[in-house]
Image (cartoon, rainbow, N blue to C red):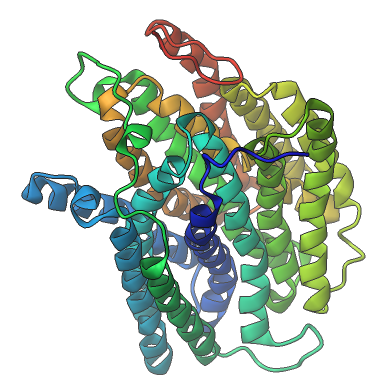
Length: 476
């Protein structure tokens, strides 16, 4: 097996993916904080979803602040300060947010806890703005999306171990009898803040370029439109990102409530299931990341089967170290076969993959709503598998053909990450009306829109002379 040629700067790409890890670690850890805060602060299910709302809305606020600062400077903010400096600044802002956790725990303030999450999210917004195009720039344009998929796999390694580590910090081992205390969140988040600052210094001293090859980031294709918002694929894609992040986050953030209220689980026993949900995204993205390497055809097919189970083994290993009972999880390996079959059926076409995985997502949620016990839990958990490849699919389709407006369009897409908080909050409200199990109808609606977008976008792009295959072909 041979790897990609040296045109991909792997020595620079490796330190960059550190920030992708942090995004996943914190996002998944929020799903442990939700039941902890719910119990400690005596919250309703709707109120508990303010955790997701505060974190994900920060992305939108951060994007708006970014647009405002760029407007005042009359120049793109990242172009002014540099990509590497932008990452370091974003990490420093997030570190400030973790300090608020210490103050909030001392004062017992839920509002200050939410403020801490909001500030962490603001920092992540700036990091996302810099890191996504930078990952594309560290190599050829043709392999840019593959590097994003690979970085997503690192992100989901963070989502897999985040809930386990945070749960251990709060509850101890599964056999421990220590009482949960809101004070127990102080140390892990102070350590996380220190890690943010260390990473900022590390990135600042690294060989990552502050101003990478702009020809790779910005497509020079001419267009008659004066704004990215004049492209229908972007407008529909913005809503697609909103509902995609929404269903991905809300499925996980409401899972603890479902397991506690209907399946009789204790809060301290839920962490491995949250870990499995986010590991499911890692499984899918490691599978997609195979294409980031130049494997021979036969080897690539073998890797498509080996990589998802390698990712599944990471989940098992992490939870074994945390002394969790693994006997429930081995059967999940059969569910992974559905992912592999769907990946093969998509033939690398982003619209086809988005359609297939959205329909599978609807099927998983319907099965979860109509069953009970471990079958329903695994049905809801499988949504992680079916969400795993949707971000690169939607992102690729939405910015196709934008030409000189690609950077603007990317910022609008990042702004819509707020769907993770808003959809979670909506599902929390719905759960108090029709029950938490049936509240997953909200996710069904989200997947239905994604399927509609996948169905419509090929014809929208075709009218602009852009045709879908394994790679999107722009007009010449």
